[in-house]
Image (cartoon, rainbow, N blue to C red; front, side):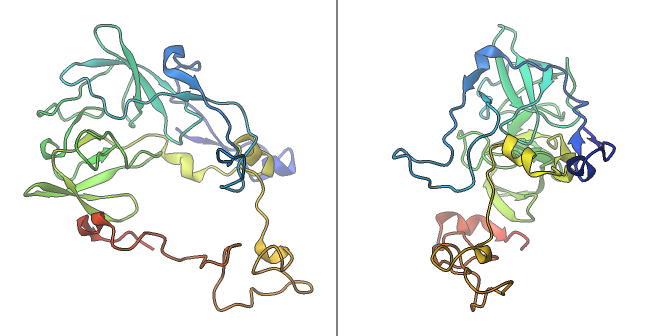
Length: 277
């Protein structure tokens, strides 16, 4: 869970760093829990690009993650910690007494051969155990948090993420998310104890354009480098400022720092404090 910096043997190596993958204990995924992930390259059912800058990259297999952990009151043994190319966090393979295997997100400090359990009732206060928010002590970090009971973990799922339980009052728990937002979540919603591992993911530097291509990220061209027909920022001789009252997207909408959350959402009443800008 550290970062390796190589000697600058080439321009691409000079500014790059990679994960050490020290926590990985198994290198081949569980075949029964993987499916082929088709590359859509940002295109819709008509073949038209609807999301730019996607395409190419290495072939991936999708690991089926159990975000609900619906087998309650059944202990499971941790078999391995594995790499998942589809997310920034690591994943763990767990096995139930009847032999069934499932993937879950890997919290830091969860070791191989440990036993974890998911239950709606109080469970031991241990990293990896999953229970309702009302059963978890105030101040503890949790991840893979449900927003609606029974829907499965929806938020706090990326590398190094953890939401702190601030208080439990009435029917709701107050959670402080990694973004700084404080939100009310029904206290019957399930969450897994502990902070997710691979916290150094945010400090890795890719170093060269080729590593983005491996990940399926295609190049992005600045609007001011285009012609006027292609972008509102385009045109002019040499290096010019944007020259508009506010920056715009290629389609003329406000860009750079504009709030994108839809107004008057039903969940607005659950937000006690907005996220940091």
